[in-house]
Length: 148
Image (cartoon, rainbow, N blue to C red; front, side, top):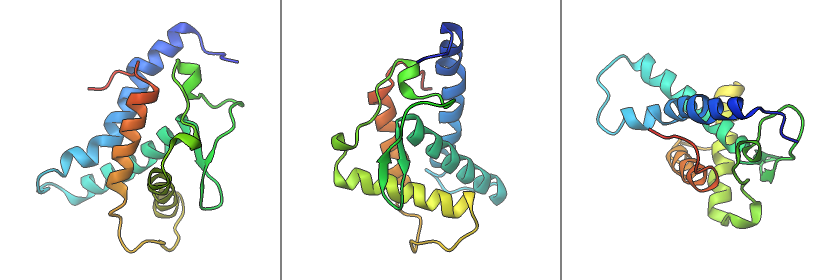
C-alpha cells in the first residue's frame, strides 16, 4: 500500500531523486577529462556515487543476496519504485551480463564503502558499467523522474 501523499511523491520525483542522481553521476561527469582539483573531492564523489547507486538498485526492486542479485520484497517502510508510479525490475528481464554487472557493483560498494573488507576484484573497472546500467534502468522503469 502506498502511504505517500501526492505532494510527497512529487517532491521525491522532482527534488529528492534528481538530487541523488546528481550525486550518483558526479564522479563519472567529473572524470571524463583528467581531474586537476583536490583528490579528496574526487574520492568523495566516488563514495557518494557508489552509495547512491546502491540506493537506486534497491529502489528498482533488486538487492544482493549471498553474492547474487535477487528480487527485493516490497513492504515495510522503504519507498519503492511502484510507490512512485514506476515499475520494478524483474530478474527474468535482466540478461546474465546485467545481473553480473549489478552484482559486482553491489559487492564492491558493500566491501569498499559499507564495510572495510578485502576487495574481491582486482580493479573497479566494473563500476562504470554499473552506473550506466542503473541510469538505463531508471529511465525505463521510472520515466517520470526529472533528470538534468
